[in-house]
Length: 581
Image (cartoon, rainbow, N blue to C red; front, top):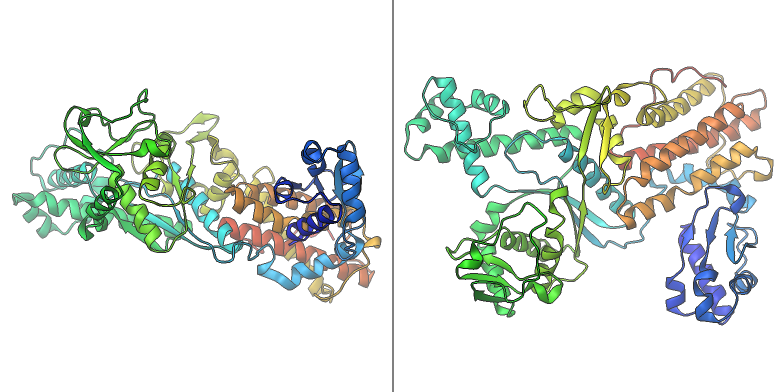
């Protein structure tokens, strides 16, 4: 990768100039300028280390340039700009060979082995099995699946996992609610629990129940257990089906009940006690909190009675946390710790969890709790997936034709399609609230960014078909061109294609999947500019073959980027056959 090669070259130059230290090299930041006038890569390293070195930034930059190893396969001589910026420009040989390398690599272009198999487990969605998945879960599914693919593309051993919270009061209420819905269908009087689930989806589940067994359960003293199990299994199956149709893949659906049945929760508490990390008390030994910031279980009642506390303040939490209540039941925290202990025991070196916007306050206590268990400080990385607001006609959309209370993932797929939904969810940083414009998502024109990128891919496929019908084929995949003959639009497109591996690397490292749709939109725009400025299929056979090869390379990059997002790359679309060659 160019990023690695450039880093190595700068390290060699610093060494030759007598100013290399690991600390100074660690401050190296390489960026891809938006303006081609500033080169293809740039760094401000000289400005960052000037005080430490004790020399003017420009003098340091000039020393680096003087000592840079020659690399005509990739770069012309570096330039010093302004107060000490270093700008690097691709050589004509690199530009001329890039199209060949993209087409030869094919689906592998953009991928690397940077992580050398580092194992990472991405837990995402993990919605309670009490109803259909909503649009926040849809956003989390798009982000989690894309992040898993990004990690694999950069050499990680990565899988996705869904944690099924199938224990606790909410599951009991779900079962009682289903029983009430079936009773309504059967003409038997049975009240819906006061805090039960009222969505119309429960009537759908009730209609699917086997009549004889359900009536027997309705009459049995312990029949609520049967309805609970039926509700749970059918709701999980529903969620699995919707996520599969959406393109979200999970290597495992891990159930909380597995932890309790296996004894893992009690074993985890024993392990914490063995490390001296628990104590019995009526209040935390250290309490600097001003209240809870999330929707998890309150501890105030437990602080009035004897409970088991975890010494999370030793690792940065604002107060020690209850892990077992005075009645012997665990709090939410203990099975969560047991679950992550299980992840580590399965060989995952890093765990990335995608959580909802109401869980900010739970992050520091969870990280602290895992460190009390002896897990690495960098084991857990939490990404908060912010709220989604659906808009139609500029107004919020609240109702669902199915659930009656919220818009479901299935509603959204039926409305705008899975491809468009995923593209829109991935366009913004997960830390930002997202206004999802349904009217825009329904449009089949260039205003819709998902359509715009897919159409660029379809247009290229159309051009290649048009050329083949007239006996023209792209230049051989191993052909290296004379880039000095490139038009400005050709060079600009090659420059954009060359950045794809770095965009993939950066998106994976920063855990920012939104960099991919941003890049693809820019690449599609660059291709359209090239397409309109440079006639692709002409009477000039060598020029035609060269430009067809460039178009094909753009097709490869667009396809690879869309694949990372889980979005299809169609070869035919409305308007895609309008070839303007």
